[in-house]
Amino acid sequence: MIIDIHGHYTTAPEGLETWRKRQIAALTDPAITIDTADVRISDDEIINTLESNQLLKMRERGIDLTIFSPRASFMAHHIGNAATSAAWASVCNELCYRVTQLYPAHFAGAAMLPQSPGADTRTCLEEMERCIRDYGFVAVNLSPDPSGGHWTAPPLSDRYWYPIYEKMVEYDVPAMIHVSTSCNPAFHTTGAHYLNADTTAFMQCLTSDLFTDFPTLRFIIPHGGGAVPYHWGRFRGLAQAMHIDDIHSKLLKNIFFDTCVYHQPGIDLLTRVIPVENVLFASEMIGAVRGIDPLTGFAFDDTRRYIDSAALTATEKKLIFESNARRVYPRLDSLLSAQGR
Ligand SMILES: [Zn+2]
Image (tube, rainbow, N blue to C red; front, side, top):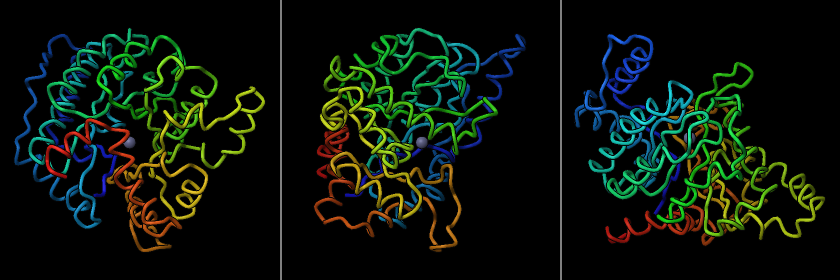
């Protein structure tokens, strides 16, 4: 199997954005009422958007299943308050749940959490439980910066986050560390903020004992791990200076990287530097980078080509394409096993 662990519903029907705009308008206009039941999206609209976009490309590229979550840049946790985020996450997650019901062989869900700057993380637990228990989602997306580029939250090692980690451990689900849109003009959303967050999350883990407190907690750091693999020597050197004997045993039982790196040299570096057991196939297709690379003639986000061409054995490729995902996402493995896959 080829499992893409990083997909978002970036092509969601217009009804979603219409609802969100109304929700935002209601924040400043008490005359506007908004309810999560007001979303008007038909199954046909969902089918059409997927068949002409994600599913079409999955079939072209031979990807069997995508772990699918709400559009990351639209999470925008900084808008409104915890109640705003709760309603928005509920609407977005339900839409992804409908995708997984329409195409159970092709999509498994990952939840957006109703985070809000400064809000108690316990406010995320109800939606998280609903998505895992009732919707059968296999993971969550956790933003280390719900402020949208102003970094007002404590580091991921802080006890502020522990209620979410306790729930993750209880349900044995991993989290993809994924920020949303940047409302800080200094940081471009997908070109800077995302990659900053990936690198920052790794360093927060390195400088803490988070995985001593939660030995089974698992994070996926997307976009190839930000700057981490490229600067692996720097991180090893910093670890050594901090008297951390072995960065591998400290972090690599708990931290994994995806392959959303959009050129061959980047994938070659990633798979050479990071143990293959810690690399999971992903493309984040129809995401940040949608064009054709004139150097290759293929889509930048057609990451399967880079793995296929990397200097890896068939066994190593199988780990990256399938086995690692089934190990890191046990609920996905159970779903697939129940489907006889
Ligand atoms: Zn993403």
